[in-house]
Image (cartoon, rainbow, N blue to C red; front, side):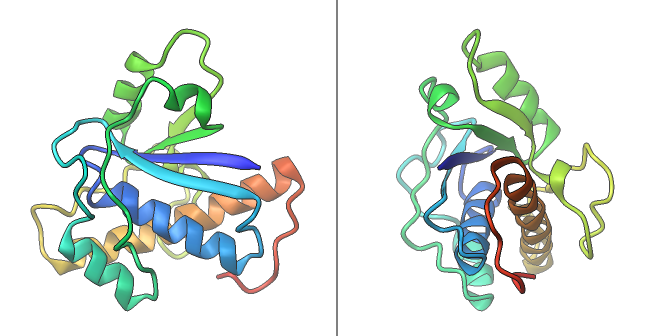
Length: 170
C-alpha cells in the first residue's frame, strides 16, 4: 500500500483535483486497492468546505466526482502517515520543507515532476497554476496537468513498487 498526499494552498482547487484524478486513474489501472490518496492545504482558509464549485463542475464533466472531498490543512502527522507528499507548486514545496518534522520519512516533491505527455510536462520543476482567480479554461488546464501528473505518478509507483498496471488508462 502506497499513501500519497497532494498539497495546494487552500485545498479547494488544485490538490482535490489531483486527488480525484489520481484515484480515478488508479481505479482504472486496477490499483485502487494498492494506493491511498488524500489532499490538504498549506493554509486553513477553507477547512471543512467542499472543492470550489468550478473545480467540481470541470472534474464531473470528465467523470470524476469530487463532491465528497472536504478541505483540510496539512498536519505534522501527515509527514509520517504518507509515503509521498506532492506539492502543486514550488511555493508549496518550500513551505512543506520548512514545516516537515526532522527525519520525516515522506518524500517531498512537485506533483508534475513525474508528468509527461500531451500536457507538455517534459521537464521537472513545473507548477500547476492556480485557477482560482481566472475563468473556466484555468480549471480545464489544471485537469489536463493533473491527468498527466497522475499518469506519471502511477507509472513511477508501478516501477518502484511492482504494481501491475492494466493497459488503457490513458
